[in-house]
Each structure stands twice: as structure tokens, then as C-alpha cells.
Length: 430
Ligand code: HOZ
Image 1 (tube, rainbow, N blue to C red):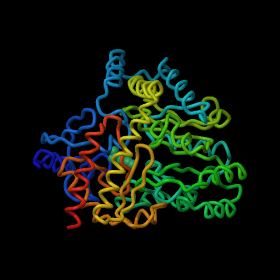
Image 2 (cartoon, rainbow, N blue to C red; image 1 turned 90 degrees about the vertical axis):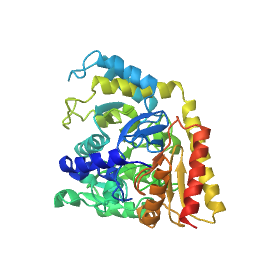
Image 3 (spheres, rainbow, N blue to C red; image 1 turned 90 degrees about the horizontal axis):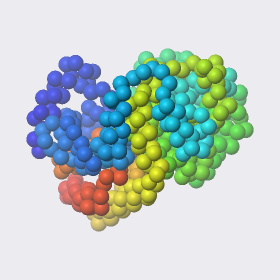
Image 4 (cartoon, rainbow, N blue to C red; image 1 turned 180 degrees about the vertical axis):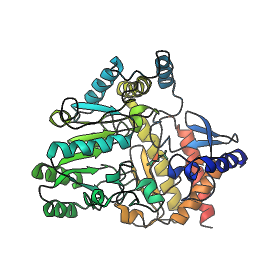
């Protein structure tokens, strides 16, 4: 595979952009080699600057649930562009967007639009602190909630990939206010709550973690958090930036049947444009300025072009809910195919899967928290990643990220992925 143009672009990029990339995982540091520079994409395929084609299994880390350059979204954006790119003033579209979101996600009475998942989680935690009058939060090891200071403690995603889960630059005071527990460990959360009684404003969690690879909650875990939050007057925040509008129209909370007080959203909500949102119970959301005292603002919040893209995808998904069953079915086909490959090769690696998200971990152990995710052999993962890429399958360049399947993947494409997976796993275990 020829990657001359990507290599040249990367060496130039390193002169002008830290590490040559605008988000760390993209640099391929965890897997070695140079990143591929993408020129265009359509449906289930990516095309790089050297003309190579790849089957796409990241989908911009989630947003491109319908596949790339989907006509519904592109048309909505093209139409919006004709009326100027930004007003910094209220618009009809953002009202329609808020109405649609609140009708799709029952736990959200009111919603505020922002520009990214990071903004959504930062704002949600500030609001929970303002609402409860308490300072501390509990987060889970390996969960990633964007790069806000409070969350770069035991963080997953790029922070875990780069080996800096506790980032320098986060003040001691901020770190002190962030308590951490292992995912799926209700006992530790209870102990933290009791040792810090009347001090904890919020528990924030990815109800299905995607940032230490895909890790599912054990039966009863989220229910236990719900009860604890009710008992201790703690705001339960589900970070559904990855799972929102992906696992079901109402996200993981709909699938798992546990209702948070607040929800943060991103990725699919923007259909590929920079959009995030946070919302929840009316009495909490009414604490946000200008209704209430907790300040949060943004020149580009509710941007008309972003709202057009977001509304187009959410409305399309809302009216065509069979898309969820279809995307889940093709994902199950891929996962089952990989399981059969593993079996045929006598390998016992772990696959975690829910809906259209999954991860293959290079460990024989069950993966149910960050500690077990880290048991995965990341050297084997790097080898697997490189070989899959050479054969035209574009995976997330880190063990600590989930794969996102789009609705554009057909059964034929799924079978191609399974076939390449077999070839690659066999070559690694000769
Ligand atoms: N941390 C993001 C996924 N969990 C990666 C974003 C990106 O590199 O675009």
C-alpha cells in the first residue's frame, strides 16, 4: 500500500501542529507508523490522500452513524449555508432541535446546545455543583468525558492511550474534587459517598463505556448508582456522547432502563458537525443562566448550520427506527464472524459488544473495568491494527477505543471484514 502523500503531510504537519494532529489518538502513536490522511469518504468507505480505499469502522469516532456524506444531512447543510453561517441569535431551528431531543429522550425536559461533548460534560458538572451546592464528583477509572480539567483523572481514550490518565496542568484542587472508582464497582462508590457525605454533587458515568474499549455495565450496577444518588441527593449524569442516538433513539438509558438526572450528548447529535448538548430534569436545567445563576454561554452554540445537520440526522433516525435494528444486525454479523474466526484459530480473546459498538481485546480475561481492559496485549493489538489497515480496514488506532459500525455497512462488507480478520489473526498466530 502506497502512503507517500500521507507521510509527507504528516512530516509537514509536525512543524505546525503539536504532534502533527489536532487530537492525540489520531497520531497512531499507540500502534506505530504514520497516520493516514483522509481526503474524502462516502457511505462505508474512506479514501486517503494516496487514493487507498478503506472500510470505515470508526465513523469519525461515532457521529457518522448513517455512513459518510449521507444525502439527507448534506442537503440540509447545503440549504442552511445559503442563509449565512452564524447569527449568534435565537433561531427557529434550535427550538425545533430542542423539541425533537426532548421528545426522543424522556429524561430530558430541557436541553442546552453547545459545540462539543467536552463542553457538554464540563457544563453539566458545573450545573450539578451549582444546583446541589456541593463540590466533589465521582467518575470511573477509564471513563473519558472530554478534556475538561475535572475529568483528566484516571481518564480513558487518548489520555489512557498516551499513558497520561492524570494530565499535568490539572490543579491539585481540581484533582481533589474528583473521586474515582473502578467501573462496575458499586461497593467502592458507596464507600466514597459515605466518606464524603454531603460533599458529592454528581456521579458521572458512560453507561456503556466506549473510551477504555467497549465495556458494559454489570446487571444492577447502574441501578445501584441510581438508588445511591436518590438517597444521597447526588445528581446522576449519564455521559451519552457515544451511546446517545446510537444504541437506541433514547440511548443507553433506554436500552438499560435506568434514568439519569442529566444526560450529556455529542457525536451523532451533530451528524458530523461540532455539536454537543446537555439536558435533564427541568428543576436542574432551570438553574442555567439566564433562567438561573449557573453561567454557560457560547457564540457558536446552536449554530444554524450545525443545527441543520443535527436536526436532519435525528429526524431521519426518529422516522426510520428500523435503522437501529439493521445496524445492530450487521454489527452482530461482524462480531459473530470474528468469534467464529477466534474459535477456528483456537484463540480465546474477549469481545465486548452492544448494539453497533464493539471491541476485540487481546486478552482471555473478561473485560469489565479499566484494570481488566489494560490486561489486553497492546503489542498484539498494534500488530492487528497495522495488518488490518494494510488490508483496507480502518480501525480505531488504540485498544482503548470502541469501534462504531455505521448503517452503511452491508452484509457483503461485513463478510469482507470477517474474512480479513481471519487472514490477519491467522498471520499473527502462525
Ligand atoms: N477521544 C476521541 C475518541 N474517544 C478521539 C477524537 C479524535 O481524535 O477525533
